[in-house]
Image (cartoon, rainbow, N blue to C red; front, side, top):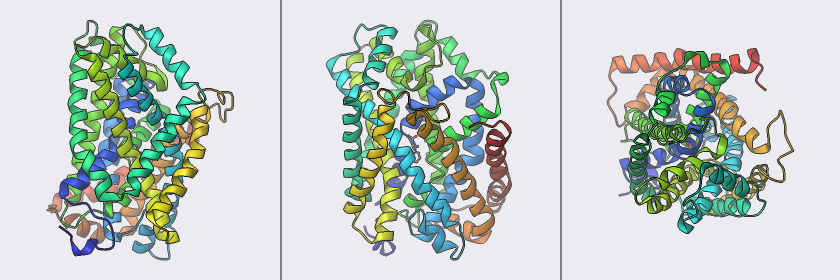
Length: 455
Ligand code: PHE
């Protein structure tokens, strides 16, 4: 069913389409790979509490703002600001978002490539009977190689580019609708196994009982960055998707649903990993290899674990794919409009450039390990910069834009198209967007960088 307002831009075919695609963008390696290991490194329960606070106070308001900006302007992440506020410099937010897309995809595709290798390993039965130490050294050996990790990364970039080339509707919607609920179901099954292992309660306590002495400016920034990363906010991915949303889709309700689904999957990923890990007497601080070591160990202990492992790593790759396409789409949508080139050309150019940068990230686990900047390898630096600098400051500027530049009337008019928003709810939202969210992001980001002197 084509709506006339979508003759010039791609549109999602149903209300569920956009929720599914944006949820597909949000749910990815950020939830299942990054959340557990960042939580492990930053103190468990106290980190989780801060994370939940940031999802509510900043995540949902910024997500909503991005949808409003994109749908109102009907344009890409950069041009949307030009359409809504001509003659101003706010488009720089969009430019920062496009740079962020490069930074994110460069290291994200490394990890996405690992998931492909782990599908193969699962099929080969490569986890059977191995101890944690063996699984650890298998991971270290594979990730430090200079051929296979790069090959898998490039395969993943090809898949991403292939889907983005096919265009929004046909490309994204179809897969997400069936596969995401399936992933959730599988995660729940794995959680049940993990918490029923003897000694699992220690892991649950680590995740859910906060130790407030673990809260520092640094861990607050990590929680904020993780929330932004996981929700896909702060770089215009959701502005771009917002421009494809129909006018009859309720933006507030959709944002709340997406953020809830995303947060649920992140917390459940913690429940998968920590109880099992601590039941095996391991330390919760595991670094980027955490899920690639702890999950195979749980599969060993599950009836049907061989099959579950295969399905899990396939679904994890798909979850990563529905995220990478949303990142590449930011660049493609911009290039296509700006340089008046075809979607296909824009895809090839941007995916090639990103892959070049990406190879350096992948090799920084092996041959390029010694090359560091601020004490971080290329992979660590891109990982750190993306969440804690680009997305955090991106979220700050987007919320400032919505609260102080877009105008209350415009904002409320847009969220009331397609959904009822009562006066008290609107008042609370405006208050959060104008005061709470910017003060919270600003305080944490500025505090961590300038007082703590993080970098
Ligand atoms: N949210 C995605 C994930 O959790 C990553 C992402 C970040 C996607 C920013 C788009 C924009 O895996």
